[in-house]
Length: 264
Length: 227
Image (cartoon, rainbow over all chains, first blue to last red; front, side, top):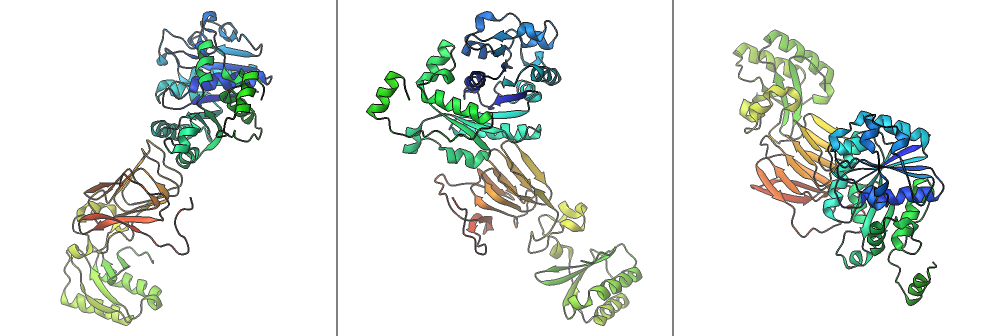
């Protein structure tokens, strides 16, 4: 019996899709059978981030409305045999699916997979309600901005109201240098308000932009800080105790050399 | 407090107030009063009592009987209260339908019905209550509490508060860490200063001379939030 994890945030653009792609790929790299589900109907992105958009034939709405079998809509990943994507429909909107259908789908996915990672759309309307309907656990993604924290707070309240207790927090796009200067909210400020368990901090990293554009999740990048952060998050999701990364370690000449050669 | 149907004794800062149900028969009232005092005689002995029975006027004989009953338990009858004295003027009728629980005495918000919220209020959550509200947790920015009475937060208050929402200027807002987005008491509105200093202790906001004033609350042995 697998587990359904929804990745959500309330606010758009904080990195839900990137996080979903990286967590899913990371779990697959550890040998689990994983499916990524894009519930952002009408604005699908996860297929692009995974580099799989040219293989889509059937989508989520086809499955929930019975146009095709689940197996037909699942797309196998390029890199991992045990990683699959269930893409969203691009030509419909959020009302094409309802929470009951999502619950049935989640139950079906749990039979087949160790982990189902659901990429939630921004907002708190039907798309959000669909995404959380079948979930067992929730991960809230938040950036160090007051607006993102405010929305994350609201989302946590809504998750708790939907009886998805103890959501976990990922702080994304943190810039240690700005925090040090006092120009950005630090981790303690965010935790003070949200008061939920932190399972990872991902630093702002150019490699994310590059890997997203290439359709290759950063978690496979053994050099970048963001890749390392996602690998640690993946292990924490499995229940391992992993210390938080030290983000403000000064980058000396040797570190740069190591980075060039590609060893850590 | 002993519960009887038509009489009640409540303590205020000015002493005891005896409430007589104006609609009840006088003989019945005296009967109940006798029973009530019998039970609580040691607790009350020697006190002075002011009486209140709404608009109802009693006869001379009835007054004498009342004084006798009170005297039997060594209580001194110290006169009658008017409706205006018992109810806070601006509220008066707003609470008349709420029953005895929500009477507000001259000194304001000392008792009444109370809502306990045993969790953190997150953004988007709104709590509205006719009475006092106590939150056992934080109130985050984007959340709001509207109460006709006082608001007490056993945590950080960063949301919007409106105490004394039906116009009671005696209402207060207190929190372990008071940094509301906006603070309203009765008809006054204020917001937190832009330069927020962290690490203050518990504070209470109330109206003094038509101004919303925030004071530190001294709690025994505790000095502010550990940060």
